[in-house]
Image (cartoon, rainbow over all chains, first blue to last red; front, side, top):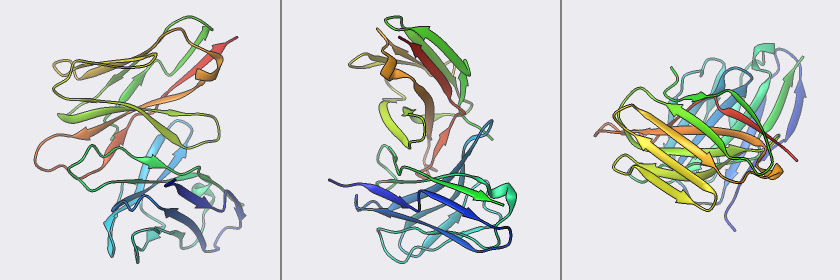
Length: 114
Length: 114
């Protein structure tokens, strides 16, 4: 069955370190998204991609970067982790624009920055 | 800015009762979707209603859409303890500038007591 996976599921790191969160989907979807979820803020879009080599900034992109070298993967990198980036991160994918844009979510990565 | 605003933020009911959650949005939409999130898990798509539809049913779920009021409601009938979760509405923008993104509300937390 097609799925979307994230790794690691839990990560503790220190301020200033570079961290990369992995997202892998087997839906063959063109669209992929990264969100962070914090109490009181719901889901906030960090970055998204509509296909290979395409990346776009979301509403809270500062301090984060993504790259899309193939259809299946969209890794999220925190260049220099800050305590404010402690959060739960979700990756999602959907078919190309023009459809319903229903999104399929991964299980999430809980990141703690000390 | 948030497109969807859910109401209430939290809801606690007894098993067997009905649960109603509301979502308001600000701009024109192509469709509105409801998602469920169990504690510690990713979001799961429940049901989608298109802008030209007024009501949709799926099992114990009933969704209504009032585009004149820019609002939607999700009714869960005969609730079960397993329905305990957070529920989010998400909107896909209307018009030719559709970008493939969904805008999520902040969610309603539902607790169903056995």
